[in-house]
Image (cartoon, rainbow, N blue to C red; front, side):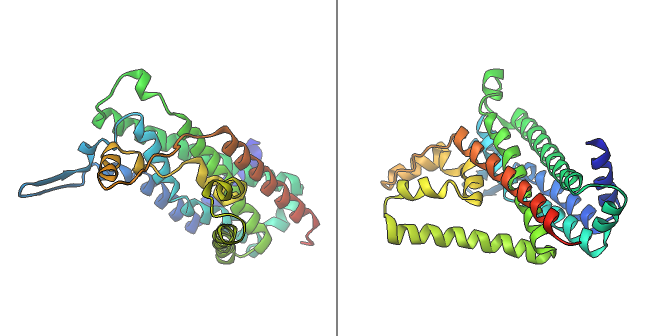
Length: 278
């Protein structure tokens, strides 16, 4: 495993575009810390996000993993460009000539995906912990370390999403078109949802039960939007007669579905590479 990782990180080390994207990605991961600095004092109106409870434990685990998940496209570009560069620079063919099997080649990419996801997860965990310790109203260990399933869900979500990117990179070979392919698939899933409402059932529960098995939808379901979970937002909604109550928890079924798609994408990447004439 370490030999394969060394090969991949050597390639990334000598790719200026990849280094810029990786640095940008981790800078954006820390951007949640700047949310605490948002403060407006205009006459009687005082607005300070940090005082609204968004950094309270355990809510911060939900908020930061969701926010961090929205910028995963930066690392996706790294994953996709890794494959595009393999074809354009002919390093894939050279690796195979040097004795690397196609299975080892795919494993090297998958190991890199897992490492990126793991580092990102640890990074988000540390940033969230620091922000929580500074701003949270609750500092009891039992509260601090509750709801950590969002951290696990974040890791699984990244691995699944990057595996999808790996498959599209091998399938299409060009990074820009591979990313476009993922966006097209997102569009297809949204069209599918609309067709289900139109042709099958207007019951959202029925539609959601089908949609949860689609790849991008399943990844989205791992960490649901956190804002309607805030008591202030719920109180405001109740005043206007809106009911925002829903299940925000991480479900084991969603994790299993995403892990299954991760296996499928990785296996299809290998099968595609194995059958392709290089």
